[in-house]
Image (tube, rainbow, N blue to C red; front, side, top):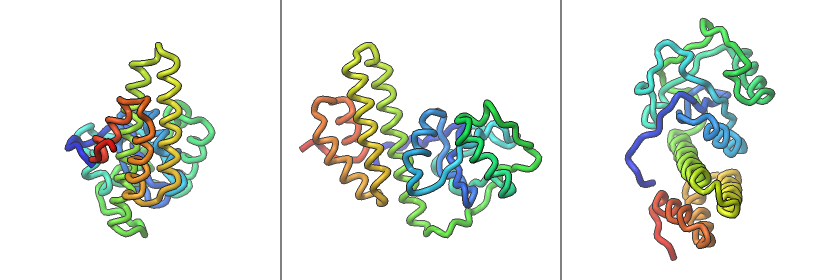
Length: 201
């Protein structure tokens, strides 16, 4: 995947079972899209890291987030997930006793292999980048109803690829095939191909 800049932000996509952080992003709406789209592969909870006194925006990015964990009692994490499913943005509805939850730096205890974890993280990063670009296109073109509708439909189709494909290479192949069908949406087509390191047929 092209691009050397690291993604960072206050919203952490946290593994529900093992508590480690898959990715941090600056945009809550993007975090929701990634969480919901990848739900067929991993169960994620969105946590606002600004509640932790040891957090800074330079502390965690995509290069190190797998080594960070939200240390919390199981019942509290389940409560957090249930509240998120009920209310959406938990930070607006749920107050957590921060004395019982900690942001700590340690290796995750996932049963997944290191390669599988890295592969899934690459999928999360790719999905996030495509979503953010599509959102920017939507914001730029919102005054043109047809263009906005096109970007929304394309995003839905792209999300389907991430939901159904379980390996990164297969995701890239499907994205490449899809990109070559959307000549009507040149900005998105160009971005997808550049991001996955492919050229137009």
